[in-house]
Figure 1 (cartoon, one colour):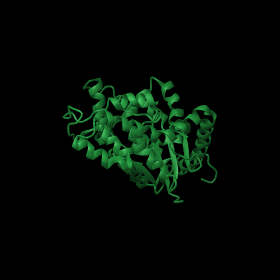
Figure 2: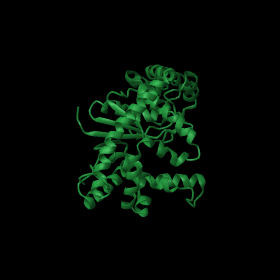
Figure 3: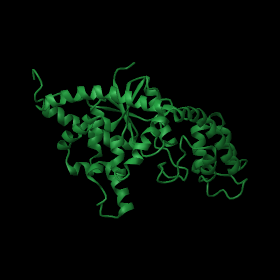
Figure 4: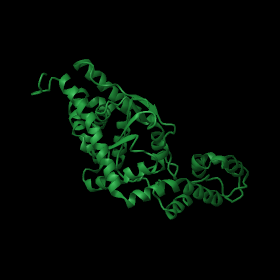
Length: 339
Protein backbone atom coordinates (compact mmCIF):
# COMPACT_ATOMS: atom_id res chain seq x y z
CA UNK A 1 0.00 0.00 0.00
CA UNK A 2 1.12 3.53 -0.76
CA UNK A 3 1.73 5.03 2.65
CA UNK A 4 0.64 8.54 1.73
CA UNK A 5 -2.24 9.75 3.88
CA UNK A 6 -5.56 10.52 2.19
CA UNK A 7 -8.14 12.71 3.90
CA UNK A 8 -11.70 13.37 2.84
CA UNK A 9 -14.76 14.63 4.67
CA UNK A 10 -18.51 14.19 4.33
CA UNK A 11 -20.98 16.47 6.08
CA UNK A 12 -23.80 14.57 7.83
CA UNK A 13 -26.70 16.71 6.66
CA UNK A 14 -28.76 13.76 5.40
CA UNK A 15 -28.58 10.32 3.82
CA UNK A 16 -26.23 10.02 0.85
CA UNK A 17 -27.51 9.99 -2.74
CA UNK A 18 -26.30 9.00 -6.19
CA UNK A 19 -24.52 12.33 -6.52
CA UNK A 20 -22.38 11.42 -3.52
CA UNK A 21 -21.81 7.91 -4.84
CA UNK A 22 -20.67 8.75 -8.37
CA UNK A 23 -19.06 12.05 -7.41
CA UNK A 24 -17.05 10.76 -4.46
CA UNK A 25 -17.74 7.40 -2.81
CA UNK A 26 -17.05 5.22 -5.84
CA UNK A 27 -13.62 6.80 -6.12
CA UNK A 28 -12.98 6.46 -2.38
CA UNK A 29 -13.68 2.73 -2.50
CA UNK A 30 -10.89 2.42 -5.06
CA UNK A 31 -8.49 4.83 -3.34
CA UNK A 32 -8.73 3.03 0.02
CA UNK A 33 -6.63 0.29 -1.57
CA UNK A 34 -3.93 2.77 -2.59
CA UNK A 35 -3.59 5.12 0.38
CA UNK A 36 -3.83 5.23 4.15
CA UNK A 37 -7.33 6.67 4.08
CA UNK A 38 -9.04 8.83 6.71
CA UNK A 39 -12.73 9.54 6.18
CA UNK A 40 -14.08 12.29 8.38
CA UNK A 41 -17.77 12.61 9.16
CA UNK A 42 -17.70 16.38 9.47
CA UNK A 43 -20.40 17.04 12.04
CA UNK A 44 -18.88 20.35 13.18
CA UNK A 45 -18.95 21.70 9.64
CA UNK A 46 -22.51 20.45 9.22
CA UNK A 47 -23.43 22.72 12.14
CA UNK A 48 -22.55 25.79 10.06
CA UNK A 49 -25.95 25.33 8.39
CA UNK A 50 -27.67 23.41 11.18
CA UNK A 51 -26.44 25.02 14.42
CA UNK A 52 -30.05 25.34 15.59
CA UNK A 53 -30.82 21.67 14.85
CA UNK A 54 -27.97 19.64 16.38
CA UNK A 55 -30.23 16.61 16.75
CA UNK A 56 -30.45 16.42 12.96
CA UNK A 57 -26.67 16.35 12.61
CA UNK A 58 -26.29 13.73 15.35
CA UNK A 59 -28.87 11.45 13.72
CA UNK A 60 -27.24 11.73 10.32
CA UNK A 61 -23.77 10.77 11.54
CA UNK A 62 -24.84 7.13 11.71
CA UNK A 63 -26.90 7.39 8.50
CA UNK A 64 -23.84 8.61 6.58
CA UNK A 65 -21.66 5.92 8.16
CA UNK A 66 -24.11 3.21 7.08
CA UNK A 67 -24.23 4.55 3.52
CA UNK A 68 -20.43 4.58 3.33
CA UNK A 69 -20.08 1.06 4.69
CA UNK A 70 -22.84 -0.23 2.42
CA UNK A 71 -21.15 1.35 -0.61
CA UNK A 72 -17.87 -0.47 -0.06
CA UNK A 73 -15.83 1.52 2.45
CA UNK A 74 -13.90 -1.10 4.43
CA UNK A 75 -13.07 -0.14 8.04
CA UNK A 76 -10.03 -2.42 7.82
CA UNK A 77 -8.64 -0.23 5.03
CA UNK A 78 -10.09 3.20 5.82
CA UNK A 79 -10.30 4.96 9.18
CA UNK A 80 -13.75 6.49 9.58
CA UNK A 81 -14.06 9.03 12.41
CA UNK A 82 -16.23 11.81 13.85
CA UNK A 83 -14.83 15.32 13.50
CA UNK A 84 -16.12 16.77 16.79
CA UNK A 85 -14.43 14.02 18.78
CA UNK A 86 -10.97 15.24 17.68
CA UNK A 87 -10.39 18.50 19.64
CA UNK A 88 -7.02 19.04 17.91
CA UNK A 89 -8.93 20.04 14.76
CA UNK A 90 -10.60 22.92 16.62
CA UNK A 91 -7.26 23.99 18.09
CA UNK A 92 -5.61 24.04 14.66
CA UNK A 93 -8.54 26.02 13.26
CA UNK A 94 -7.91 28.77 15.83
CA UNK A 95 -4.19 28.93 15.02
CA UNK A 96 -4.79 28.98 11.26
CA UNK A 97 -7.37 31.76 11.56
CA UNK A 98 -4.48 34.13 12.24
CA UNK A 99 -2.98 33.34 8.84
CA UNK A 100 -6.02 34.17 6.67
CA UNK A 101 -7.58 37.58 6.09
CA UNK A 102 -11.33 38.11 5.87
CA UNK A 103 -10.92 39.56 2.38
CA UNK A 104 -9.12 36.37 1.26
CA UNK A 105 -11.99 34.25 2.53
CA UNK A 106 -14.48 36.42 0.65
CA UNK A 107 -12.43 35.98 -2.54
CA UNK A 108 -12.49 32.18 -2.34
CA UNK A 109 -14.68 31.20 -5.35
CA UNK A 110 -16.31 28.27 -3.54
CA UNK A 111 -17.20 30.39 -0.51
CA UNK A 112 -18.29 33.29 -2.72
CA UNK A 113 -20.70 31.08 -4.65
CA UNK A 114 -22.24 29.64 -1.49
CA UNK A 115 -22.61 33.09 0.08
CA UNK A 116 -24.38 34.30 -3.06
CA UNK A 117 -26.75 31.35 -2.78
CA UNK A 118 -27.49 32.33 0.82
CA UNK A 119 -28.13 35.91 -0.22
CA UNK A 120 -30.65 34.72 -2.80
CA UNK A 121 -32.44 32.70 -0.12
CA UNK A 122 -32.30 35.19 2.75
CA UNK A 123 -31.91 38.59 1.11
CA UNK A 124 -29.11 40.66 -0.36
CA UNK A 125 -27.50 41.90 2.85
CA UNK A 126 -25.49 38.75 3.52
CA UNK A 127 -26.25 39.10 7.24
CA UNK A 128 -27.20 35.43 7.42
CA UNK A 129 -23.57 34.41 6.77
CA UNK A 130 -21.97 33.34 10.04
CA UNK A 131 -18.33 33.54 11.11
CA UNK A 132 -18.24 29.74 11.07
CA UNK A 133 -19.56 29.58 7.52
CA UNK A 134 -17.11 32.17 6.22
CA UNK A 135 -14.25 30.37 7.95
CA UNK A 136 -15.07 26.99 6.44
CA UNK A 137 -11.82 26.87 4.38
CA UNK A 138 -9.79 27.42 7.56
CA UNK A 139 -11.59 24.57 9.30
CA UNK A 140 -11.06 22.35 6.27
CA UNK A 141 -7.33 23.12 6.30
CA UNK A 142 -7.26 21.95 9.93
CA UNK A 143 -9.09 18.76 8.95
CA UNK A 144 -6.53 17.92 6.30
CA UNK A 145 -3.36 18.82 8.16
CA UNK A 146 -4.42 17.27 11.49
CA UNK A 147 -3.97 13.88 9.83
CA UNK A 148 -0.94 14.75 7.72
CA UNK A 149 -3.13 14.61 4.65
CA UNK A 150 -1.04 14.47 1.51
CA UNK A 151 -3.82 13.47 -0.88
CA UNK A 152 -7.32 14.97 -0.97
CA UNK A 153 -9.93 13.69 -3.45
CA UNK A 154 -11.99 16.65 -4.67
CA UNK A 155 -14.22 17.81 -7.48
CA UNK A 156 -13.14 20.75 -9.62
CA UNK A 157 -15.48 23.06 -7.71
CA UNK A 158 -13.57 22.32 -4.49
CA UNK A 159 -10.10 23.10 -5.82
CA UNK A 160 -10.18 26.69 -4.45
CA UNK A 161 -10.74 25.30 -0.95
CA UNK A 162 -7.75 23.00 -1.26
CA UNK A 163 -5.59 25.80 -2.65
CA UNK A 164 -6.43 27.91 0.39
CA UNK A 165 -5.28 25.01 2.58
CA UNK A 166 -2.01 24.89 0.66
CA UNK A 167 -1.56 28.65 1.20
CA UNK A 168 -2.07 28.23 4.94
CA UNK A 169 0.46 25.39 5.08
CA UNK A 170 3.07 27.37 3.16
CA UNK A 171 2.62 30.44 5.36
CA UNK A 172 2.71 28.37 8.56
CA UNK A 173 5.89 26.56 7.49
CA UNK A 174 7.50 29.84 6.42
CA UNK A 175 6.93 31.38 9.86
CA UNK A 176 7.43 28.41 12.15
CA UNK A 177 9.61 26.02 10.16
CA UNK A 178 8.85 22.90 8.13
CA UNK A 179 6.05 21.33 10.19
CA UNK A 180 3.02 20.61 8.00
CA UNK A 181 2.53 18.65 4.80
CA UNK A 182 1.17 20.45 1.73
CA UNK A 183 -1.68 18.37 0.25
CA UNK A 184 -2.23 17.52 -3.40
CA UNK A 185 -5.59 17.10 -5.15
CA UNK A 186 -6.87 13.91 -6.72
CA UNK A 187 -9.74 14.87 -9.02
CA UNK A 188 -12.85 12.73 -8.98
CA UNK A 189 -13.58 10.71 -12.12
CA UNK A 190 -17.08 12.22 -12.38
CA UNK A 191 -17.95 15.87 -12.21
CA UNK A 192 -20.87 16.98 -10.04
CA UNK A 193 -23.87 14.75 -10.75
CA UNK A 194 -26.99 16.51 -11.99
CA UNK A 195 -30.39 16.22 -10.37
CA UNK A 196 -33.46 14.57 -11.89
CA UNK A 197 -34.78 18.03 -12.74
CA UNK A 198 -31.69 18.91 -14.78
CA UNK A 199 -30.21 21.13 -12.06
CA UNK A 200 -26.41 21.09 -12.07
CA UNK A 201 -26.47 19.90 -8.45
CA UNK A 202 -28.27 16.97 -6.90
CA UNK A 203 -29.37 17.77 -3.36
CA UNK A 204 -31.93 17.20 -0.63
CA UNK A 205 -33.00 20.84 -0.48
CA UNK A 206 -33.72 20.79 -4.22
CA UNK A 207 -35.87 17.65 -4.06
CA UNK A 208 -34.12 16.16 -7.09
CA UNK A 209 -32.06 13.35 -5.59
CA UNK A 210 -32.13 9.55 -5.64
CA UNK A 211 -30.88 8.33 -2.26
CA UNK A 212 -28.93 5.12 -1.84
CA UNK A 213 -31.54 3.99 0.67
CA UNK A 214 -34.61 4.93 -1.41
CA UNK A 215 -37.34 2.31 -1.65
CA UNK A 216 -38.53 0.94 -5.03
CA UNK A 217 -41.66 3.07 -4.66
CA UNK A 218 -39.64 6.23 -4.05
CA UNK A 219 -37.31 5.51 -6.97
CA UNK A 220 -40.24 4.84 -9.30
CA UNK A 221 -42.01 8.06 -8.35
CA UNK A 222 -38.87 10.16 -8.75
CA UNK A 223 -37.73 8.67 -12.06
CA UNK A 224 -41.20 8.87 -13.60
CA UNK A 225 -41.09 12.61 -12.88
CA UNK A 226 -37.62 13.14 -14.37
CA UNK A 227 -37.10 15.79 -17.04
CA UNK A 228 -36.95 14.54 -20.65
CA UNK A 229 -36.59 16.23 -24.06
CA UNK A 230 -39.31 18.94 -24.05
CA UNK A 231 -39.54 18.77 -27.85
CA UNK A 232 -40.66 15.13 -27.81
CA UNK A 233 -44.45 15.45 -27.79
CA UNK A 234 -45.68 12.06 -29.00
CA UNK A 235 -44.40 8.63 -28.07
CA UNK A 236 -42.82 7.96 -31.48
CA UNK A 237 -41.30 11.42 -31.99
CA UNK A 238 -37.51 11.44 -32.45
CA UNK A 239 -35.76 12.96 -29.45
CA UNK A 240 -32.39 14.28 -28.33
CA UNK A 241 -31.05 12.02 -25.54
CA UNK A 242 -28.37 14.56 -24.58
CA UNK A 243 -30.99 16.90 -23.07
CA UNK A 244 -32.84 14.08 -21.29
CA UNK A 245 -32.12 13.38 -17.63
CA UNK A 246 -33.31 9.79 -18.02
CA UNK A 247 -30.59 9.15 -20.60
CA UNK A 248 -28.12 11.02 -18.36
CA UNK A 249 -28.71 8.40 -15.65
CA UNK A 250 -28.72 5.56 -18.17
CA UNK A 251 -25.15 6.59 -18.96
CA UNK A 252 -24.24 6.03 -15.32
CA UNK A 253 -25.77 2.59 -14.89
CA UNK A 254 -27.08 0.97 -18.06
CA UNK A 255 -23.79 -0.22 -19.54
CA UNK A 256 -24.07 -2.32 -22.69
CA UNK A 257 -27.66 -1.21 -23.31
CA UNK A 258 -26.63 2.40 -23.76
CA UNK A 259 -26.03 2.36 -27.53
CA UNK A 260 -29.42 0.78 -28.17
CA UNK A 261 -31.15 3.27 -25.85
CA UNK A 262 -29.50 6.18 -27.64
CA UNK A 263 -30.36 4.94 -31.16
CA UNK A 264 -33.96 4.13 -30.29
CA UNK A 265 -34.41 7.53 -28.63
CA UNK A 266 -33.08 9.40 -31.66
CA UNK A 267 -35.17 7.39 -34.12
CA UNK A 268 -38.41 7.64 -32.16
CA UNK A 269 -38.57 3.90 -31.58
CA UNK A 270 -38.43 4.39 -27.80
CA UNK A 271 -41.08 6.14 -25.73
CA UNK A 272 -40.20 8.07 -22.59
CA UNK A 273 -42.35 5.91 -20.31
CA UNK A 274 -40.65 2.71 -21.47
CA UNK A 275 -37.25 4.36 -21.15
CA UNK A 276 -38.01 5.46 -17.60
CA UNK A 277 -39.22 1.99 -16.63
CA UNK A 278 -35.99 0.48 -17.92
CA UNK A 279 -33.98 3.02 -15.93
CA UNK A 280 -35.97 2.18 -12.79
CA UNK A 281 -35.21 -1.52 -13.28
CA UNK A 282 -31.49 -0.89 -13.85
CA UNK A 283 -31.29 1.56 -10.95
CA UNK A 284 -32.88 -0.91 -8.55
CA UNK A 285 -30.48 -3.64 -9.68
CA UNK A 286 -27.56 -1.27 -9.19
CA UNK A 287 -28.70 -0.27 -5.70
CA UNK A 288 -29.72 -3.76 -4.56
CA UNK A 289 -26.33 -4.89 -3.13
CA UNK A 290 -25.82 -1.51 -1.47
CA UNK A 291 -29.26 -1.61 0.11
CA UNK A 292 -28.90 -5.21 1.26
CA UNK A 293 -25.66 -4.34 3.04
CA UNK A 294 -27.19 -1.18 4.47
CA UNK A 295 -30.12 -3.18 5.81
CA UNK A 296 -27.64 -5.36 7.70
CA UNK A 297 -26.14 -2.32 9.41
CA UNK A 298 -29.60 -0.94 10.16
CA UNK A 299 -30.26 -4.18 12.04
CA UNK A 300 -26.86 -3.98 13.79
CA UNK A 301 -26.34 -0.33 14.77
CA UNK A 302 -23.93 -1.37 17.51
CA UNK A 303 -21.47 -2.48 14.81
CA UNK A 304 -21.66 0.93 13.16
CA UNK A 305 -21.06 2.66 16.48
CA UNK A 306 -18.09 0.39 17.21
CA UNK A 307 -16.53 1.15 13.81
CA UNK A 308 -16.92 4.90 14.43
CA UNK A 309 -15.57 4.68 17.96
CA UNK A 310 -12.52 2.62 17.00
CA UNK A 311 -11.87 4.78 13.94
CA UNK A 312 -12.07 7.94 16.02
CA UNK A 313 -9.58 6.53 18.55
CA UNK A 314 -7.20 5.66 15.71
CA UNK A 315 -7.56 9.11 14.17
CA UNK A 316 -6.94 10.68 17.57
CA UNK A 317 -3.47 9.13 17.69
CA UNK A 318 -2.21 10.87 14.56
CA UNK A 319 -3.89 14.17 15.44
CA UNK A 320 -2.20 14.11 18.85
CA UNK A 321 1.17 13.55 17.18
CA UNK A 322 0.61 16.39 14.71
CA UNK A 323 -0.41 18.82 17.46
CA UNK A 324 2.72 18.00 19.44
CA UNK A 325 4.79 19.07 16.43
CA UNK A 326 2.67 22.19 15.87
CA UNK A 327 2.88 23.36 19.47
CA UNK A 328 6.63 22.82 19.48
CA UNK A 329 7.04 24.87 16.29
CA UNK A 330 4.84 27.64 17.70
CA UNK A 331 6.67 27.67 21.07
CA UNK A 332 3.45 26.63 22.82
CA UNK A 333 4.79 23.42 24.31
CA UNK A 334 4.76 24.63 27.90
CA UNK A 335 5.58 22.18 30.68
CA UNK A 336 6.79 19.48 28.26
CA UNK A 337 9.89 17.80 29.66
CA UNK A 338 13.05 18.37 27.66
CA UNK A 339 11.50 20.96 25.36
